Image 1 (cartoon, rainbow, N blue to C red):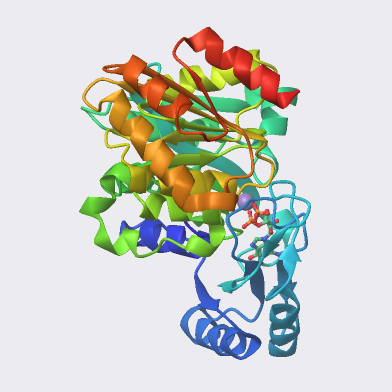
Image 2: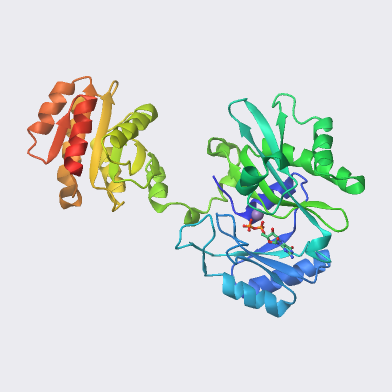
Length: 397
Ligand code: GDP
Ligand code: MN
């Protein structure tokens, strides 16, 4: 689950990580009130107004702006809230901004007196260890740094059983070229950041930039936080932070129906049981000259109701030109799945407007094929994998 910057910062702050402080606002009046409150609490006169959407590169797209007085806070908030913000990480239509973060200006007395670093914490699956990735080249696109100056990106591997050792935190501060108070602050920052990462069950923290202020404070100016969905049952308060407006509406609906569904941009919808078979089916579609429109694992109980829900969700995508159903009947019998498909088809009538290819293999596969062939419906049945691929190719023509 991805979070907004303001939510990510809330989580960081709860573990003692220093962050650029801010208050979220849904309209210009709230923005002004937030700015006044921040001035009282921090003494700042200047504020940055930051669009809250699930995408980075907001600064480049005009979604992060400095306000030097309350009038500017109001005007900028008015301009950003409600806009469709286009950044290098959004589609060309952009993302609608529903709220802004009014934050204290931390680049005092001017940006040239500060330093921006990059830091992320993530899981290195190949090593089975956590990793802190960091760079002196903060504030910009890290992909670009990786491409042009890869020697400026450092990695610190952390054994999850031992945790981050003090010498590792010191090495990071040293490699970032810090000394004196800034060095000590960075050691604290990194240590609390790592603790926050582990305790919040995150799968990614990306802080770009981490800022060294002119008076040697180290703080998180931005926060991209991803929490492991499988751990959300341990964090009811984080689960409530989910902003469904930021997610693909079709995926949200599929999740509510208990389907494992990922929207993709191809033309062949798939309905499969089991994640492994679903992956293999996507390969099959590719080899047949199509492109998968989705990943969909219907799970173990492919009854008529579930099959119908799955068809409806797949068909919401107008790019879908054909649907391939590929089910292996192990515990679930093929004839029951076939009956489910026939029932769903009859129930949905005209709603199904693309050819359907059904491949059922396993228990009672032959009976299932007969059921479908005799149903009188425009469904192509297959038992062999290759047969199914050929039929996909045929209908795409
Ligand atoms: P992103 O563009 O979506 O990654 O958003 P960030 O939160 O990283 O902000 C983008 C840029 O805005 C930063 O790299 C800074 O240059 C600038 N910025 C952020 N906070 C402040 C601030 O307090 N004062 C000033 N002057 N600039 C800021
Ligand atoms: Mn950033």
